Image 1 (cartoon, one colour):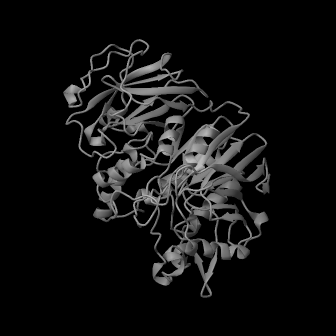
Image 2 (image 1 turned 135 degrees about the vertical axis):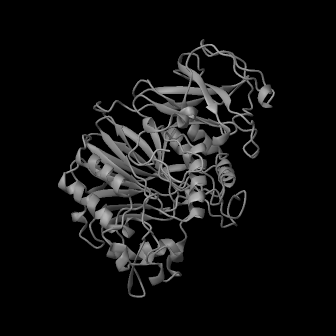
Image 3 (image 1 turned 90 degrees about the vertical axis):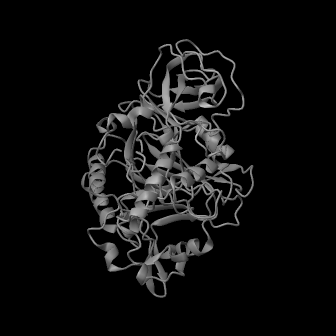
Length: 535
C-alpha cells in the first residue's frame, strides 16, 4: 500500500504480483477446465495471434479498460467473472491471463505481450502496467483465457514531457448515479476522441434513494467488500460506460460517494473505507494498487501533457478535517443540510483539505511549473460562495469553503511564484459553474487568482433545494459568471499555446437511453490572463 510520498518501487514485492508479466516466452497455461470454466488453454504469445475465439466474452463480462497513461506506459485492465451478477469466486487459486498490446485492432502487429495473475484476493481483477511504449501513440490490446479473447480495447499514450505540443484535449466527467439515469453522455466523449477522460469522482453512488430511473442491486448502503463489489459490477454494465472504457484511457479520482470518509479513527469507518478503496481499485484501471484490508491508498498524482499542460490531481477526501464541524450551528432544512452556517471553527488555520505531505507536493509542482498551463484537478469546488439564510451566512463546507486556510496557502503559492496560467477543474455540484477563484466571496472578480470550470454530472441530479440557494446568491457572488443546474453532460477541455477552451457538452436526456450530446457554451481563457471570455 503506497502511502503519501512513496513510489510503487518502495512497496513490498508481493504487492506488485498482480501487475507483473512474463513477456514473449512460450508457455503452457492452466486450462479453463482446470479452473472449472471448461475451455482449452491458449497457445503461447510469441507469435502474432490468429485464432478462433468465443464471441460472447463469458469470462470478461466487464470488458476491458485502460488508464493512467504516461508518455511511455499505460495500465491495462480486465476482471474475470462468470457474469456481471455472479459473485461466486471462479477459482481458489490465482489464474494466469495472457495479454497483448499491438498497433492494430486485429492484434497482429504485437508490441508487447505477457502473462498476468488474476488473484482471488483482488477479485480476479487484472492490472498490467505496460512500460516502454512510444509517446503520443494509439495502441490496441486484449486479454486471453483459454480459447477465449476479451473485447479489444483501444488506448493512447501521452506526448513526451519535453515536447512542444500544438494542442491537447481531454474530457472532464464526474458524478454518475445509476438511479438517476443512463450514462449516454459517454457516447459523445467517444465521438470526440480526446486524449483521455479525466473522472473527478463519484464513479458509483453508495446511497440509494429509490424511485429512480434504474434500481440499485440493494437499497441500503454498501458496507462490506462484497457489497461494494456488487455496486461496482452493476455500474460496469452500462453500455455507454463500457464503450468509453474500451475506446479511451481514463484518469480517475474518488470522491464522497466512492465512500472515502475523511480522516477517522473509527474502526467501522476504516473497515468500510478499506472495502471501498479495494473495490474501487479492483474495478478501475488505476496505477497505484490497494492492499486488501487497508484503509489508505495513494491517490494524488501529476501528469504532464508535453510542455503544454501540467495536471495536478488532488486527493480531497482522505486527509481532510471534519467537514461537519458547523452542523450544530446550522438549519438542517436549508439545502438538505448540505450547506452550513459559517462558524469560527471552519476558518481555523490548522484545518486542512490535503494534509501536509500532499500540500507540500502540490506546492513544489506549482513553484516549479515548466508547462504553459498549470491545472489543478479537484473533486470539489475551490471558489468561495456565500449564501444567505435567515440573515446568516451559509457556505458549502464540504468544498474548499470549509478549508479556507488551505485554499489561501495555495493561492499564495500561485501568486508568489507566478505559476504560469493556473486554472482549476472540479466537479461534485451536478451543475456547470464557471467562476474566478477570488480570496473572499463578494470580492471584485478582477482580483481573481485563476479561473475555475466546474463540470456537470454524467447523470446525477441536483434538486431544486440544492440549486436554489446558489442561484439566489449569484448577485452577491459576482465572481461566478455562469451557473446551470438543469443539464447533465461533461466538459471538453482543449489547450493550445495561446488559449484554453472549455466547452459544455450537454445531453438531451438521461431518463431513457439514446440521449444526444450538443455543445452549449464555449469559454476561453487567453494565455497570460485569468479572465474568462465567451467564445
